Length: 357
Image (cartoon, rainbow, N blue to C red; front, top):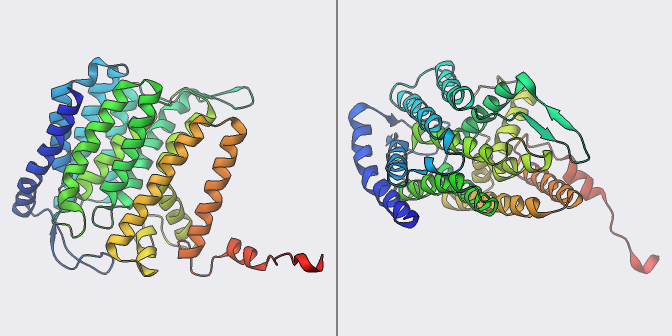
């Protein structure tokens, strides 16, 4: 039944996307080119609506609310509707950042307060517990809002956000399957199948953009699903969703650092995100997207290794990831062109001459 549901979601997305494209032009949900954007012609957005419709069809057919964690199901769907309406409003009217944030807060509040999805405590690796108490609600909401915006920030190239989100969803589904969490597995696969169908029209050269409708919804659903399997657990396992979402999280983190270093407002848009820097480095549009897909897949693989490793093994995985991220950041100038402390340090290390020893 699950395979049939996924196939229906996939083809529903393929069939709905051309209809959503016509609707986007009709209601003025279009994206005009400017100095920050890569495309050179007016493009329809709102494509995320096709993903959401396909997702709704999938959960109506399979009804995953009967599975474990299904008690959160209604709140997740209501929050999804709120985030979709927020995205649609922005795609049509380009609402203010404050109003967009208000919609994200409302969606997160439904899941966290009404649904009861809260990270209440974590167990430390060497003993002891951190009980968040009253902070559990705001901290959980910050996670959902943060990941929602992280996915939105990487939505800068054809097929980029959709592909990275699909890889994250498949990783979440795989790990949830291993953990025996059927609800998260089913939900993640349904959203992934819906997104892959949309990618037929969104991969370079794109015929339609997912817009904030799609990016906000994918960010929201990924944030919620990644949290469902890891709440009230150890500190080590809480890092797993952070690793899975390594690409959007690191891009957002370094965007904040970059703006602080350059003394710019945190909300100020720029053209120095990961995909922009790779394009400046000489990669083509398609190569850049595929390279970031590869990075996202490596983070997913690292999450699997991390989940199976000992405490010390997991520390080695984290250090290796941090070292690799820093090398990439400095190599492509993600913070600033002259920011290369690690590369300069490595260049200064002289090789050992064995003959003179």
